[in-house]
Image 1 (cartoon, rainbow, N blue to C red):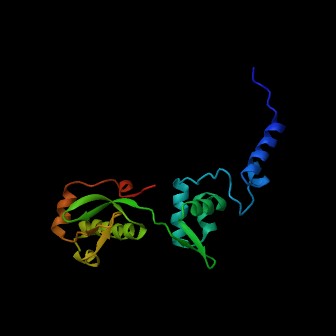
Image 2: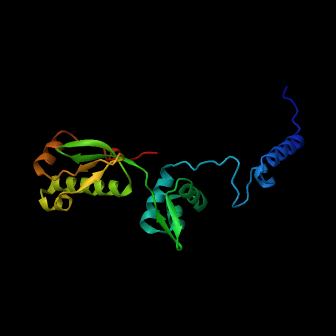
Image 3: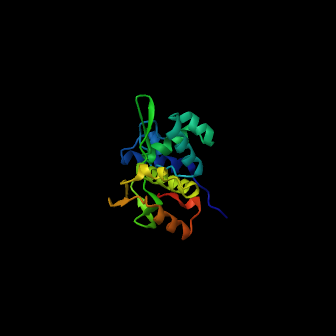
Length: 189
């Protein structure tokens, strides 16, 4: 048979222990006021809806719209952004500061390599290159590769990887086989 709990005594014990640690009564209850640090902060974990909301926020700049379109509450989105340092509010606007590394395929020096790229900007440049290569392979328009001549992406360790623009090398890489698009752009969490 289960033993009887003395909830009143447990509550008093919790308040007394919190007072010894210098915490407020609201923190001891587990419901810290705004501006007070919670005793056990629960980190906002990433999921598909929150990542979709971050993508919409990056495009629109409206946190409420991003939350609504992706099906999460604005409070949950704000906590996710704050806890993971993905965006900050400056001058009444949201500025996305997502600098998480991303693992992507990079066409460089005659081969396709899986590389962890430094941040969003490097991943975006590589994504544009991959898109241009894909379009080039279907249309054979060399002008699509011109914007990437002499450009490189930087990996997480600071190494530069020049983007492949040689049509012969790109055809050879394409002949070796491709990959599913879901594997092209992967966040490292």
